Length: 353
Ligand code: MRU
Image 1 (cartoon, rainbow, N blue to C red):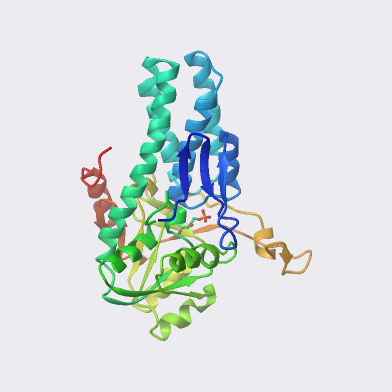
Image 2: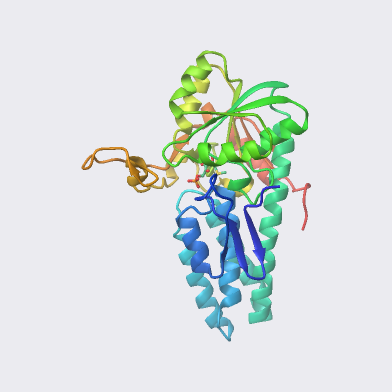
């Protein structure tokens, strides 16, 4: 099983995703500042993984805090949450995890400083364990949706590397289908400009011996038109109450193409990626990253000096283009306002910590 992140006595251990696929290098963050930096620089990335990392970063910060009384600890805790909350704006899992840690602080506060420290470390580990179990459940629900054989197109990386490890979300659906002995092959887009598909999805699937073929983003229309795609499965960074879904830039284009070719377009994500406070995708903040990630590949400049570039890192796919949203609680179908609300209210039966 691929391990993305782990809580250890020495600190938070992360596989460095900037080094993949060339090297499998694990880094140990020994302070919350190092965890925040790792999220900001995308050493760890992908919505669920960012949530788990934020929770562990907070636990680490509070574990290391010198505060001797509760008000002092609370001040440090608030500062840590603020620093982590400013790392990346789009994936709602970050804010969801911070809110869970805040709630844990409130609940444990009556017991004093040591009780709060212990509760926060335990909560971070619980969030990690839940994420693994949620992705397994997504794999079970989603695996059943895929055809008995065929080609599944995925974009960006929504696998073990975007979660706590293990199954992942969209790749969890594919792993679930493989476990059901379905003959699926994966078409992975390279995902310009950050190349999560080429670097990470291709590495993960190859590592797990799941057949994967890499294409450039611009090949998707041709592949669909020539009958080489049977369905699409992607992850999500934030899903609004009506089902509008923010995911890696380029997802919207693929969804429009899937509709044109009558192909089902599935989204797979845990409930921690669903933001029921937003009625539609219009309110989702879109991270604007450095134009250098467009003008350069690695350290090599590919565009002329002086030409401006843009890098919105995510786009929003309207709910009307989405056939189903696969969650750990089951599969939501349109109209999503209703189905997501019903699933949100359903008890979690797959996992109790
Ligand atoms: O910028 P990233 O790499 O953190 O983007 C997140 C993603 O990998 C994708 O948008 C993904 O499909 C959803 S997160 C499981």
